[in-house]
Amino acid sequence: MADSIVIIPTYNEKENVENIIRAVFGLEKPFHVLVIDDGSPDGTAAIVKRLQGEFPDSLFLLERQGKQGLGTAYIAGFKWALAHDYGYIFEMDADFSHNPADLLRLYAACAEEGGDVAVGSRYINGVNVVNWPLGRVLMSYFASVYVRMVTGMKIKDTTAGFKCYRREVLSTIELDRIHFKGYAFQVEMKFTAYKCGFRIVEVPIVFVNRVLGVSKMNGSIFGEALFGVLRLRCSSFFRKYPLISPRRHGGHGGKE
Image 1 (cartoon, rainbow, N blue to C red):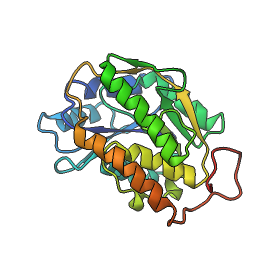
Image 2: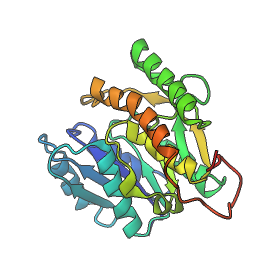
Image 3: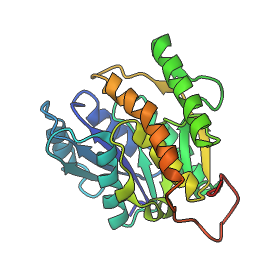
């Protein structure tokens, strides 16, 4: 059995889902894939079910009713992966904005180089974003700067959604206390791991805007991130996080 599973949330991704699954299965290291589909009316789940006939032992599907949010999809996926004893659990988009080949580098950062959370970072080496309008690049970049200032995390790409977690991280974090559903979920997960004392490392990637399908980004998602970060920081003063002790290695702290 593979020790790693890639969680891919989908909503109306019929143009991408088969290709992304085949790309993951084509890598030199074996990965399993868990697709979490929120009732896509375009038939995304039907495509995955067809592919399960070809990959019965490595492709899995959770179907949910209606759009319930990115955060709840990942939380459901994390719980499923923990229940099925995976050691390394990945987040990845379905639209090829994340290069599946970079899964190998994220895995190495955790399995071989001592990271607890590996973040596929657009901003660790300058700005590595392709085909985004300048306004969106600036919004994303300065959002990460803002999050760093508010939270104190030493992470260049705080809103990144391409990640690898060691099992210990997700089994330590109190997943039922993760509240955000949109892109602020990505910040909340990193911040919680940081407060628990896990080592977060960044792996440089090139992010390519989707070619097929429709982006799910909108103003309300950005607003949640903007104001949610402030609430997250304020609530952290009154919350006791489960700390890792003794630490296996140094890294971004837990207590500040």
